[in-house]
Image (tube, rainbow, N blue to C red; front, top):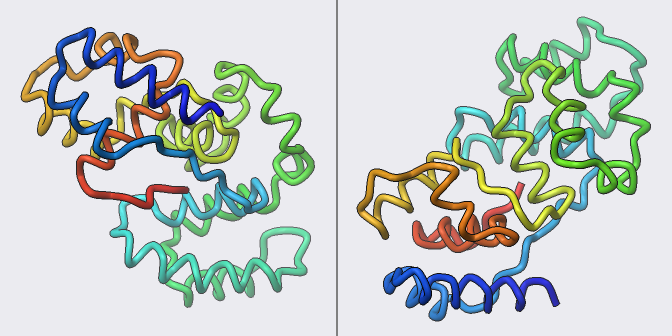
Length: 203
């Protein structure tokens, strides 16, 4: 099982690098699994858009209202009635624009999970970065929690940065530092988030 191999690898690597606090943390937490999203890819990206720059509680409340609207959406293109519903759900004008760009995107609607998993990290990035509202962080979260890529470290994630500073107390928070934990950097993200006691990270 991949998650058990990841646990063993990251624990041994931490011992090898003399990162005692990290090794103790990994051993205490034990093997962690990546919880893959069961949503359609369109809904998954929509949820990411809605959650940007919001607290977990606010994002969950707005997403719950928006998800109901999306389930009942029978429109084929952007229209004012739908936009008004999104506004009433709590979405800003900019997020409504981003959301429309996702839910009416034919490529996104037609792509299969198999197609997404076949893509290299570069191809996946190139496919999504052209979509308004989807940036590097959103793409990295999708690689981890939708595709299940085992080797992604999101250097832009504020939670990971805070966890790094808490356990290492170092200034070397960069890609090079975490390259040491390849090919299980996604699992490393899970362990780092758990330092902040965020036990249910998922997108």
